[in-house]
Image (cartoon, rainbow, N blue to C red; front, side, top):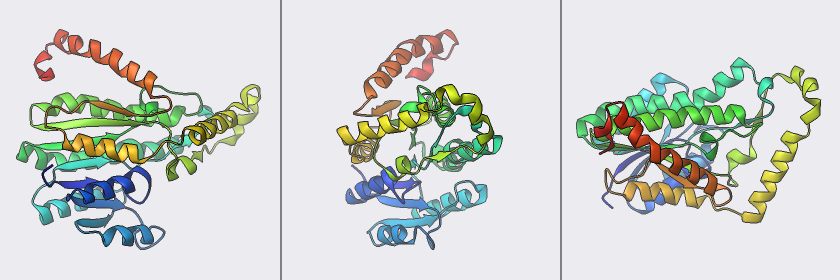
Length: 287
């Protein structure tokens, strides 16, 4: 695999942390973003910074200017940007009605708008190169929406929609867009699930009040019994980067627990997507 310049978001923990280490081990130049590198993430920033070919960038994902400056620095120092991995995200769970508009704005700002900020900034350089790869980490909940994960799923559906359209728009410009769909893994994100702000609606949901808790208990049990390794997601990202341009699949499911039905959904859509594009006069975008 030739050496590439790779920008990864959310590298202070979980998939991003493992991906950064995996790519550096292969000799790639990695720009690892996280926030608060002088505060709560200082230890993680320091640990990554001592690795050869790693530059840690303090980036606030919700700040347009901050994202722009980060991408400009990568290009100024390395002369190009080959791969963007949009990994950062967070989860909100609970009764959907209990989420305020501000709650939705917060999760969409990180899970949808932040990836778009980076995509918007890297595309001019990738188009000029006529080469590039954008990997967006979504979720199995980007394909199906489970009760009490409704708002989180909505944000991941949004990123999936952006990714799928871009996959076809950019293919003939030499740029690949690929989606990683992880299932449940024992990462810091899964252990720091946040909940909704509007508790006033809970009384009206007394008939199903125990269900969110049951879901989390069941999920914890599945993770404990299967013990899925988060490195699987990092390995899938590495594999996509190492795959030849134009040969990368749109979606890659990484879910040893419930991935089969997500794969089945992906397969069913893929079978009909091509004929649909052709019907609308865009069949040439398939090749």
